[in-house]
Image (tube, rainbow, N blue to C red; front, top):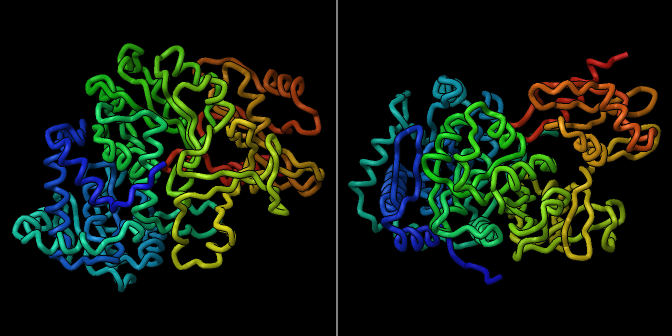
Length: 531
């Protein structure tokens, strides 16, 4: 793969000028449509306005907003002046908000009220005195708070400013300069700030869209949260770099609005976690004929059950959907299946490394390279993060002296380079001294056609070290019993490895990006099964 040596501003400007009259962003809930030409004008205007209000190269600027066009415009405008975007979950509480703003030393803050709650501005005012670095707060929308700058004022300042200052700012930016600090979910300890550069985000985006077959004729359905890398980089930035159209159905996940937008705007690609796709396919408003235009996209964030993939590819017609595996620390995707791969490869593996990546499997204890079809830790090279912000110890622990990032995921690679995940190092269950891998048990339970989602996890047990639970979500109307599930597992699994506890549930605790929080399941099980 030929490496693209450009900044995000340079790459987006080149595409925008080439596709000036084509649709760039459509937000169906807000009734907004913008061409590439208009988008470029807005990016430049906001960038100039932000400069006018004192934000300069190297400043960290948080973005705290739902899925609105201004989120994407802010990210691109900040990239164009050399500032560093710090995405924050629009549903974040006070402690998380304070931690990120303080730890990242944010000088600027761009915010909009979330449709899920209406107190974001008030929450910020409560903690602002504790954030001495925070000197500029920009507010998108009609809300007004003390000592803040409205979006209209930013735009007015940009329109009245000579673009020479903006051009001068762009000329000082290098492709390997930091462009974002994205915080991990923090499920074990404090969130870590992953520092990423222009070079990594651009080249991973181009490599992944090449693998998917995305072109300027595609219309990408974007409902994944923009604060997450899957949303802001893997869909938004990646789509714009190909000259595609971004169709945004809603400010926050709303299946009915998403289904309506897919049909009305003739979307060609969809991006989601398996749980999101299930909620769309099982929604009362779902009609197969409305998905006739969909062919491409990515399922990521969790393993895709065989039945779900079959329903998408064979029944619904999303024939070229791919499965991807990526991590924030690796600037997004590491591996991805090919659109033409057989369904079993798109379910049993996470695909092959992208052209810009190297992947190897090593022994978790010794670091020794392992031959094909041997389980070990997945390690990768290629456009990695620059560091964990202000955490040199954590950085050195994650990236070894030879430059390999250690993912913490267990897997194996076959002779053709396809990688299969077998579990997380931290998720491995040890009961009575025996190592048990949740993914292997989940695959057995997924064989039951009535199962839509299953989570197998361990929790502390005084006698055995850990005990195993399997919590299962069934298809609507299913009468499958726990006894039948247990009998199926006993028939197909060594009894020494089988779960002891089973439960039918209607939902799982998840992060805002749709990942199931197994640590919360373990806490719930420990209380429920306490003996």
